Image 1 (tube, rainbow, N blue to C red):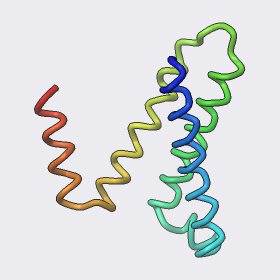
Image 2 (image 1 turned 90 degrees about the vertical axis):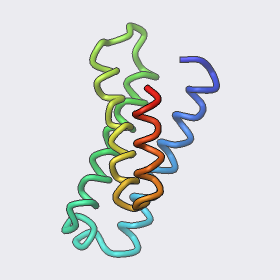
Image 3 (image 1 turned 90 degrees about the horizontal axis):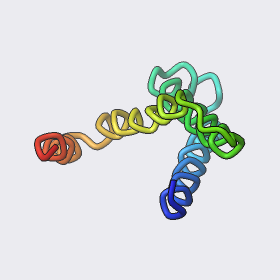
Image 4 (image 1 turned 60 degrees about the horizontal axis):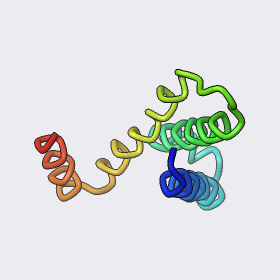
Length: 98
């Protein structure tokens, strides 16, 4: 990873994990994990954190790290649920251009 990508990866992972912690503190752990989207957010945050830690600790690039990085794509699904129609249009435009 180049330096900019690595720094942005760290920043977004920290922000996403902090969001999970703040939501748990705000609505209680029972309510957070009682909501399917809360469990989804938590699994994405933990997966991203594990991916980041394994990437940093690995001197040999492990193939499955790219699989773990796929967790970050799942964030987009979560944003679609929150963002509604506008974000869906952006995603569709992105897909069409690929």
